[in-house]
Image (tube, rainbow, N blue to C red; front, side, top):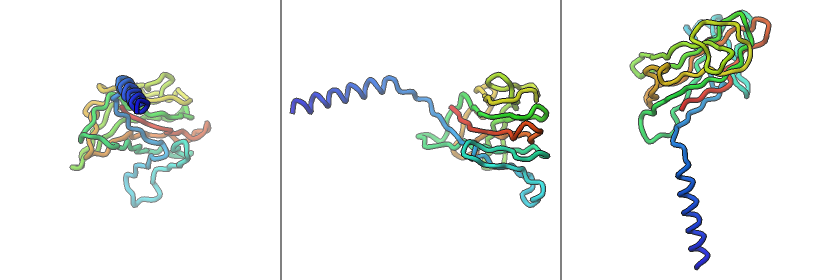
Length: 184
């Protein structure tokens, strides 16, 4: 009996120590392979946005057309109907230096309205750039802080939330990718 009491005391102490170090940030993540093409006219099969899914993300395989990708961030299991977001991050691989790769956070509401964050472009430094540029080639991330998210700094259970990207066509350096995205 004494051993089980000691073991129970150790377990309770361990749980208290671990609880004191627990982060209460709520992360939501999405795979780049979950991105879908945004089609302006779903009936027009000749003008659909190209997308190619692989286990490490989604790429634009076209050599003639930029593609608009919608990359969702699921709400997840929460105890409330909304969650504050201080940052949204999208990881990418940009392999062209002659076409724009840009993204923005979106939230689509039940009534049909959509709110957007500021638009950001791929850039050599983490976080991206608000200035249009095509010069950077490589892997990096675009990040929006709570100010840049605007009204999208709160994710609602009744809305579609994610990142919308213009993924450039392959201009000779290879296909560009969305690899992953997350919010906290």
